[in-house]
Length: 194
Image (cartoon, rainbow, N blue to C red; front, side):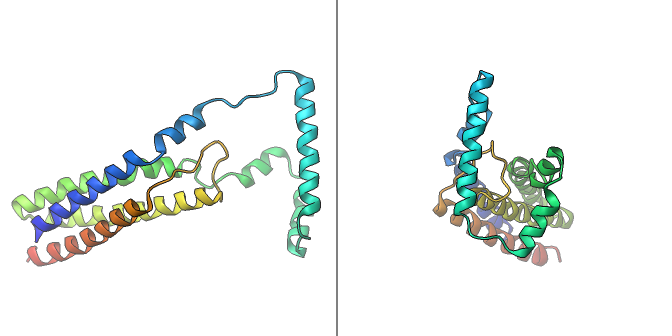
């Protein structure tokens, strides 16, 4: 059973690696790193600001009327300094997606190493450490998926960081294999540790 979990863990890791390679993460980072074109002259900046104000006024006129709660919040927030407004609009953890992009595969690889040790020597400690790491990996993966889904919808994502896109079939394959790996690792750790 431990060998089956190891093979399934390797297949899950392979699907995850292929998912990363075929995604647009590298291209998204390169697009975000390139500097945006800024107006060179003060007059062009003023023209740009005026056109932005006109377009926002047009959008405000086309928007549905605000609720009482939104109107009270707007009245309370109109005197906020720009730094406070930026802080209110900033995501809670600005580098969350980048952190998850590293932590999810890293914890999976370390857990795979512990599971390999458990498979070879059947030491209970290795099995439970590997199970703990697969649990952490699943939680990190679900958090990463949620953060990417929110970024794709435009909720709470930094403006300079485009949303990554993944193949839906590969995400389903990777998630299903991870779920089966999780269950099989739990069963193997329980059965073989006695």
